[in-house]
Image (cartoon, rainbow, N blue to C red; front, side, top):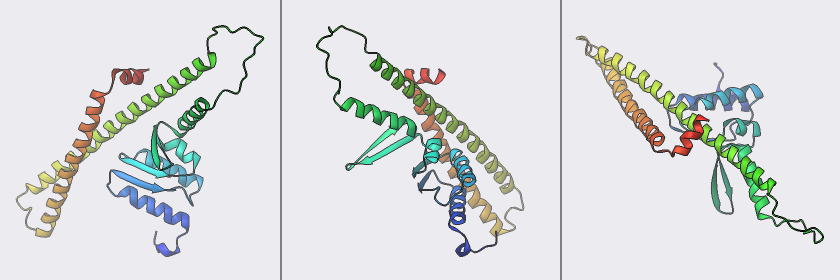
Length: 224
């Protein structure tokens, strides 16, 4: 605890930076290879902390384990363009494989000796079914993540409002202004909490609006 930063190892510095970052209130985190220098236990601790993070998380990582467990959207950058794929990294890989398969010409040669018949295309039906399953899981996961975020926001709003009430009780005491420095500090904390409640309420209303306006097909998927 009492070590100077300059004597810390690379992994210790990374863990310290992540701890400081998570303790600072913010609605967006940008991470570049966050698991570098971390051992397995530290990576799992980081995953748990980031999974509980309530804001937007944007990260670059070559750690497949980290990406598979955390990413809910994949951004592909190439040829001067960026494309966002909703879903996990595994679903992104499957989607890319399907694109390549559809883009490549068929290598099979027609058998002239065999008469052509209108047989059902089982591989296509199987691929469509697989695609529908992935889309269903993706939508369900998005809705579950949104509901989790709503619940987290409601808890944070309630906690902040309780703190606001406690400060207001303190501010209503007759001797509140006896210690001017302490009074000013309390007033500043009260104002900061009021701003925070307003910001959290805006986030909650935006999420509730998305839930109300989402298509019925998506709502139905979430119940499956």
